[in-house]
Image (cartoon, rainbow, N blue to C red):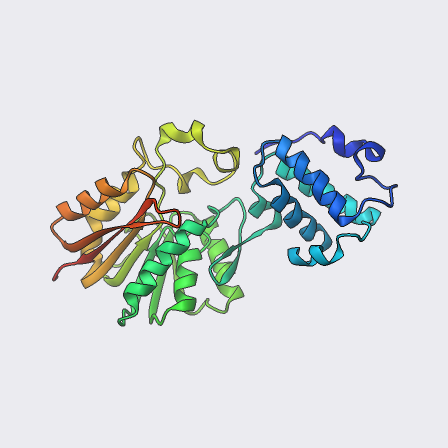
Length: 308
């Protein structure tokens, strides 16, 4: 993690405008100044992040800021905002600073123990829900992290059994907290272990879904600091080509899927075709499809289990 020095701009109160004197530092002026400051630190979403951070410091919804642009900030409000801005300037992810992130219908607790749920993964959830509308009853979410996939499926679907597993006990603790927030603790079963370890012998599901680690070790230097320096590496990297976990999951999935069951995987750019070929090569699946993300890029592979 980064040990940040205090930015000089924030310490020169009378010059930077975030000090204890200056009645003219309104909400809008603070947002504009902070957005430019973050932009100069390499944060591409400076304006939006400044709004989220200021809303967190003030304890209000972000949209409420728009109704109070002209209100001067009090000294204690500016002091509460300073450390949040410093952290974001050091490229700590916004979601870790404010402690939460939105995912479909949920607002999830998020901290450095878990991968930050991405909008792309919402498409994976939708793929499963669309397929399961015919009456699927059981689902296993492998590598649940903060619980985004499992809890969304439990909230929006009609499952009788939802199992969520993760190799990290710290991640499972976060996921369990998120489940309790939505009164899902009794509906989602959390288990610790890697890949198939937490499953019972012969245990089968209608759906196996996973957003596994899929980044190649050699690509670490190409990642944004928010990802490279802050998110848990075990949730990001999977060997030389990024496919170590997915290969094992594809190979073992047939033994844990019911006849006609669905395997649904998220993957990285350039990986979908190879994964689809590996799935087909098992001989256990019928229809294998590649699905696109919100920007039209191939990011998901789905396949239906043949007769068991």
